[in-house]
Length: 347
Image (cartoon, rainbow, N blue to C red; front, side):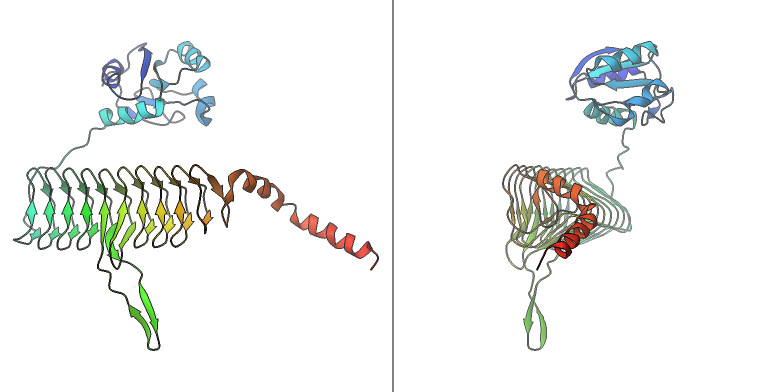
């Protein structure tokens, strides 16, 4: 694809094209990071990007840039075709869709798929090899169900969903439109509910359901548990990374983002637009307010106010945590000084 052709497409996108300088109008065969890009590849830079220093030596063919004069001047001096966007990262995402268009499988049901006669598969839906779909389940229109997916009884999958290889949807799970469940993810698995008795642990039946609202994406190996009663609900547009555990009865607002190895215990309530970085743990029934952010490895044991940024274990305000962190390496020296002061102090 010619760079000029790509820019014509991107100007109708959401990244905010300011202006472009096609230069030699290179032919683009793909994209790469700036330090690895060739003359037939596209790359991008944001303000403050660590790869900015690589621009002087990069062999990149074309660039998507912020409105930053030093970058524009350097690209011009090197004869690199470029375009200026309000959001170069978003422009790059839109460009990748054009440079690497996805191939959609044919809307066919593979002969090896096992589909209960009381299940419904919507028009335009592709069902791959060895898929199992249980009694009473309903798949909407234009879905893609990759090989080995298991859909238990009475599951509802909305239009335009994609279920990747070996994903599992347990009974009663409800997926809205445009959801993506990646390989080996499990939606609606039994919550961890047991009652202690004199004879040992007595299992609490998990009769509830999991609801994924429109546009939710679930990463590979992630599990989202159903509760004993009621529902576990993931808000529309929420994006969940690989290897995340969401416990029974959890509710999240719209537009959250949970990075890998996040664990959210049963009954927790996560607000709108919350960001949990890698390995964050949220305790039972904790409430995390709208737009709060927790940095990596944070342990959240008490409620977090809306808009707060927290770090550490247990969670404290991020700025306080940064001050504490600078002290950790000095603790042995401080302890030594304290012992000397105690020794020299008259008793």
